[in-house]
Image 1: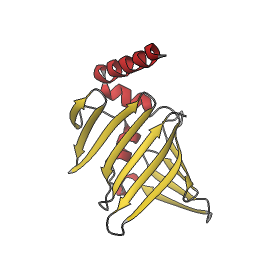
Image 2: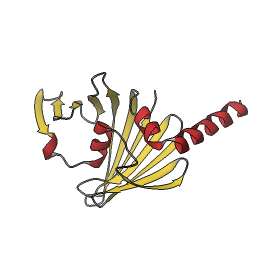
Image 3: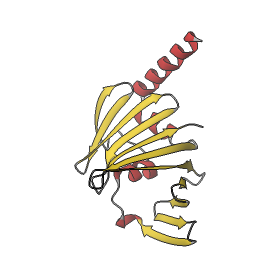
Image 4: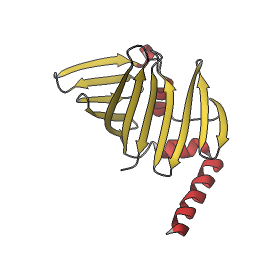
Length: 163
């Protein structure tokens, strides 16, 4: 069993050092579970949401939030369709009205050539874009953690995992 874990760690290290862009893009091609935790220092409240992330064959993204609200998001190059399933409401936000680095990376792919990347080791790196820092950490081959402050300066942590 130890040999298996060591093999996984070695393969993860090789994958990350070989081509970080490809590793991140391949990770987000899979169906993933996510847990998002936010701490709002203005209200001293923790907020948590759970759901699924899925990239469709036409390269659109489908995000389903199960808790605390029942919502679905369909993300494409045109924008985001938001479905509030609890209240049976629908809204569309055009992509030119959205300023979100993480959403841009998920939608258009990760490219080291276009981003200011700082490598810490084979499992951790950060990028800075538009004055905001995003920290990426592979906890293991099946789990990726992303930390950042959102557009309202709320500390956010998202754990993506392969089910």
